[in-house]
Length: 274
Image (cartoon, rainbow, N blue to C red; front, side, top):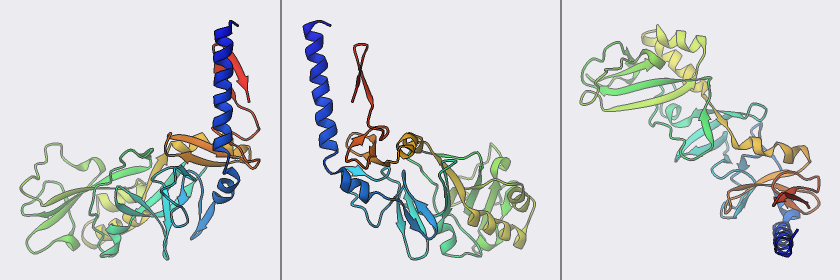
């Protein structure tokens, strides 16, 4: 190794040690501050965190930004794009969570009406293969072909219609006929399709209530970064400034990966073990 390479090598080594020491300065506090919690029987742990007991202005999070869960008096709530959803289930094995649209059921549980189209934005979430779409058209002044009329949502002479998954015609022209279009997501099952696909009147309303109450499933990707940390008895966190996952360790250190005391840094074909 030439002198210039040797100097660069030790310079990077010193910077790395300084970063680790500075990151771990308050790690014992962070480790104690980031335990999992229970909210109405749901385990809240990384990438989710308790919104009630966490200072969201801190640069380092106990969970992923936007995954804060509020433990209300009735149920845990997750806000996505300013819309509130009841957290029905979190599965840390399949990296999925089941959500229920609170607004759709809160006004009239016997006749649910979704008010918004869900936008996931930049969150590391995606719809599950278990989901399907329900498309609503509200306050229509004219008939919509092949749509299922929702009697409980009709107002005066105006009607509201429902299309299940792919039953909506490609050339459907609703502009100027209906006031609003909303696409809701529910879990796909044989019973859901059957109860909504052929039912009419009261039976259709009951099927809609069951579908909306069952919620829908979202998968998250960021949680897979936490496996090594948890396996090494660490607690996962997130640095909102650098957008990197962190691992808080019991010995007062912070790493990017795991807590067995070592990680590697590669430089010019040489590997540095810290």
